[in-house]
Image (tube, rainbow, N blue to C red; front, top):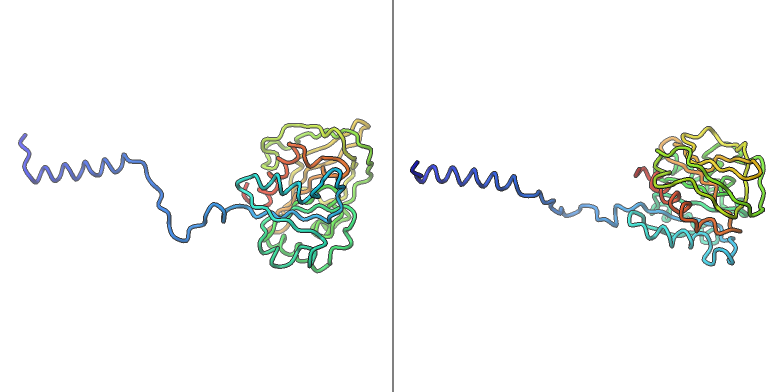
Length: 257
């Protein structure tokens, strides 16, 4: 069939459409879009500054920041009780998506107004909260739970803790298999907290004690996690499984998983 100018134009136009459909789509960069850094979860690790330097030379906040800072989806800051406003100024909290809290000996020294601000932000969905180990007795955690949050007993004898994954489908348990911490302390049930949304981890000890050791709640619009491991007399927070659970908890508390 002879090809005149009109049919040639029609055919080449259609060929151009087909060619465009066959080409991979390229995403344009739009001015003002969030960068990768801006989309990271801003995690602030808070501690009271009392960890044993023989075990944690840069204290708890240093140990956790060093590990969590390697995660590309997380941006890490550190705060301590000794800083102005206990490291919990409005400016610091404005720059935080998730607050990871470690305290054991100085709960009463946290200013009431700063604890109240943390609680208010969590309830409003502006801040996720992850409480570690004895932080179950901290002012923010007790304020969010509305209970004493005390275990029925505890022991610091350096015996093994065996941790089972009770809810393997929960995001906090992602990539975590049952594991053992070779030397740590013990908390025992009953643990005086409200009924959790999920019991992710359960611990048991060779003498028969058990403890729900990874718990989650949604408090109004905010997410809260409690993770039991973390006594500063033992290098618990260097354990790979504990670190993975903590990173998972931060992402979940930030509503990213």
